[in-house]
Amino acid sequence: MSRKEVPTAFSSKISSILLDVKTIAISIDAKTLDGLERIARAAPRDPSSRRRRSNRSEIVRLALAEFVARQDRHDREERDRKAIGANRARLRREEKALIAEQAQP
Image (cartoon, rainbow, N blue to C red; front, side, top):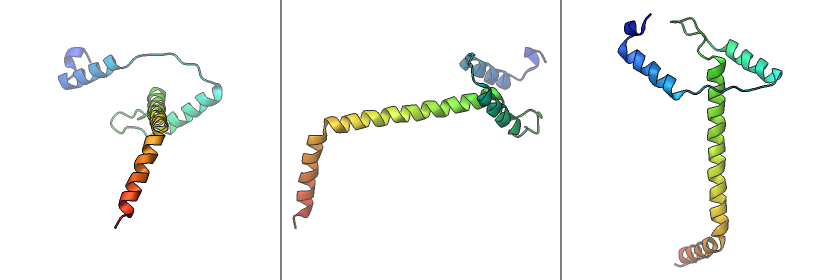
């Protein structure tokens, strides 16, 4: 099918996806590759195209996205811990003041 035969909405969606994707090369050990292959083979097939819904690239993208999200969460939590640690004395004073205020009849 030539580009002219591809519906415009579909063509623009594919173009935007291709513009957002970068190709990289990675090296992984055989055991990890075997696991990746097993997961890709177990992915269900799309009934309309008969292709697997997840290929190796999609699986790696999902895994990396989860890893990045987890790392971002860890970084935020670490910043919060540092902020709490830096303000610990002030927070304790505020805590004592609130408890004393609540204890009064």
